[in-house]
Length: 85
Image 1: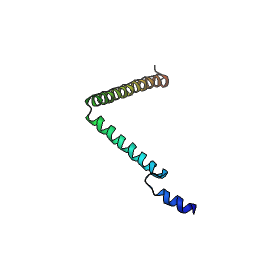
Image 2 (image 1 turned 120 degrees about the horizontal axis):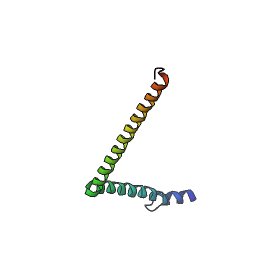
Image 3 (image 1 turned 45 degrees about the vertical axis):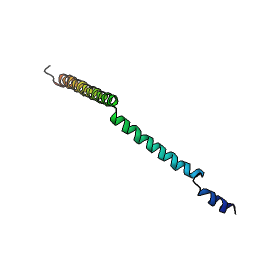
Image 4 (image 1 turned 90 degrees about the horizontal axis):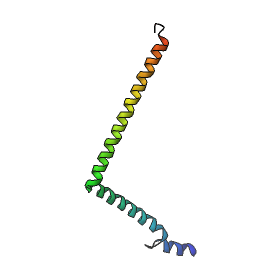
């Protein structure tokens, strides 16, 4: 009997199981709206581009620094291994 009552109540639109799907739909809708607003906002676009440019510059500087360090280490190894110096 209780199973029949529970089954009858679980099919209603306000049963606890349906709120999870409504919440998921609401979250998905908010994510879509946020992405849409970001696409049409000129300020966010400029900020995103400048942030990407700064990240690329930083990455390039890091690579250049590593290349310099590698060259210095090669010179040191050459001096150590070369008995003529």
